[in-house]
Image 1 (tube, rainbow over the protein chains, first blue to last red):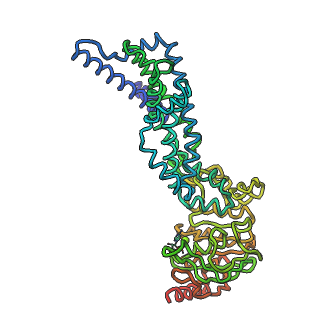
Image 2: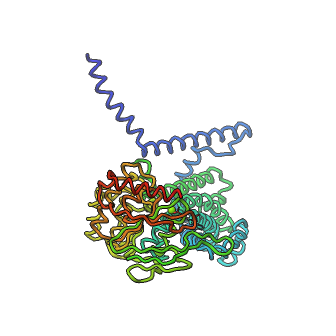
Image 3: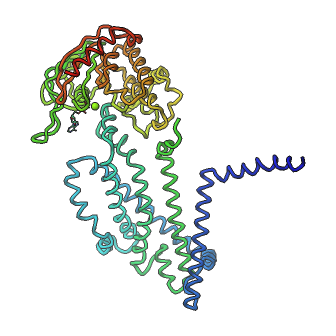
Length: 277
Length: 243
Ligand SMILES: Nc1ncnc2c1ncn2[C@@H]1O[C@H](COP(=O)(O)OP(=O)(O)O)[C@@H](O)[C@H]1O
Ligand SMILES: [Mg+2]
């Protein structure tokens, strides 16, 4: 009898915990945590294997990296915000130019006939090839670092906005036209919202691409600040360099999360489809 | 009043040209209704887009209330084949789209229309969260929001189950009698044509031409479906279509 009472007391508690764990948000956080732990374990393992083979601790492990990160937090923080500012500014510039232009080219057939060949010719050129000219135009300060990243991301966003605009069902356009829309209203009420999910996906890809270009930009000059500069400058202090790399990963993760939140706010209609009625 | 005289509509030019509508003439009095019936691909949607001002005819003239149609007009409402709802707008925003695009902000009438169509409770939902029948009603609400004098409907009830389809047909009949707009409906469904058309024009294969006009004087009542006159009209339509 006593045992039974206990059972009926503990069971709901257990299932409440279980339900809590199954909640989508908790699950997302948990998956993130688990994958971070696995990643750190793999890192530690690799570092240990390298040590065993080479007989020296060449590759710093996560503990060294994090203790170095905590020790130099003030310095790394400074570089973190410099890089974050450059990356976000470059993303905004690329988005502000590439998105509307891509929609325009994708929707206006006459313009596309004229602009498409230009895109086909310039898109395959690795944008790194333009860096020299960008340095000539923008000097060696902050501007050039933002410009290098912005140029690379501009093409990426232009091409995906154009593709997304071309894929829009004619039905939506006819629908707003028959309701009396002007040309400008077609952009605002159909082209923009219909392509937003694709553009946000493209923006996620841009985070990785932008980080790579930022590294190139920041390390092309011998001086200056930013995480790229910091990592390269710490070449002879591997633990410190790895702390810088951890900071880069954190920056990437932060931007991904920011884009996720943005998508949930701006594309609310996409997230209601799973639960009809 | 809708007056269409010798209208032909063609897509493209040169050797790629597709003639979709050829030499079609008809007239619909104020408050009248005309249903077009014809096989799919014959040019029904094209004809309707011509009257809506979305496509320009290569020949002939289209007049609504005495003035030539040269573009979309606020007194001409069009209900598209799949209701034409925008997935990123809520029921309320979709229903008031025409008003909003014209910078006339939704007023009490909009709320009344939604209440009449039993959509007020779902005004905050997105189209993906609605049943097919609800979607069609939002399309109808959008058209009614402008108090149009001409209502154009493109197979508005295709792909609905029979029960929902008949319910919305009943609703539409009531709305037509109440609001007295002139109605032009295109469909490939003979029962729909016979239920909603005062006169029914049978179209040929593409390019659409009027084969014959069938009078349907008994229509106008929800119980019409059960009458002998209804079955007679259906028989007549079948006969003309098969010719
Ligand atoms: N934009 C277009 N360009 C060329 N042909 C078209 C276009 N739209 C429709 N058509 C053709 O015109 C014909 C009539 O189309 P439509 O009016 O949509 O037919 P229905 O509505 O009767 O099914 C079809 O054969 C279709 O293939
Ligand atoms: Mg059609």
